[in-house]
Amino acid sequence: MRYRSVALGVVAGLISFACGTPSATEPTEPTVRTERPAPVVGVPGDAAIADARAVPPPGMYADLAGVLVEIIPADARVIGLGELHNRVDRAAVRSALAVFTAALPSIGDRLSDLIVETWIVDPNCGKTAVAATQKMETEVKRPEATKSEIALLAEAAKAAKVQPHAMKLSCADYKTLVPNGEVDALAMLTLTTRELKRIAISAVVHRDKDPAHRPWIAVYGGALHNDRFPDKAIAEWSYAAAVDKVSKDRYVEIDLIVPELAAADSVSRKQPWYSLVETAGDWVQVWKRGDRSFVVILAKTR
Image (cartoon, rainbow, N blue to C red; front, top):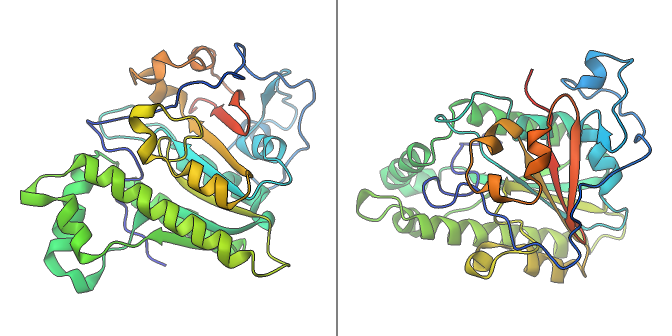
């Protein structure tokens, strides 16, 4: 499948990152683990592989693979992964998308489907679709490398025998996204929510017909649409409640935060987990926002 990169989530200039209001059960301190998770072999680019003798301090992890293995409940059904996006006007650092791709083998044998917040341009929609997609790519300021990173994620999924999915836009959708030559940010948020929700629900219903299906379905995109505890003002742009319902309360939210990007983001700096960004270094840290909701602060780019 050839992926064409478009907005992986939140439209730049409207919402660069959105987190919901903390739940009543949200802790005031980051999650602390006293045991190191079982080592994961074959995940490149992390501190543990760079130095096999390195052991993370209590409450920290060597890599994202170890985090995913530990925090995702065995009975989970859908995992909504959200990222703070790389942009051309931000620090050039390793993306959350690349880190997740490297970690995918650690959970690949439990995934049946991977839904990615991107779309493939429909050739039947002609120049309108091409122009709208190009306009969106420019508007959200995504690095050119994002296109190849999405393709690599799709390849990693296929290698693990996981079915990748992209959003499907109609010809009318392209016109809605870019009416009169300008991007409609609200339309983008609404359309993205519609598609991620549609595909996730369809995947659950389809896989549940087979008793032998793999237990997990993953959705990867921006850290807005996956929000379990959205603020009322942005709740309509989260698919979490609908997917949680169809999965019988087995939806899990995981936000992946690149610390260098969070440090440059005014919304992130107001979040209760931001203290972990300030202490970010070689290890991965986890903040539990509430039931089945986690914020993962990735290691800094070396």
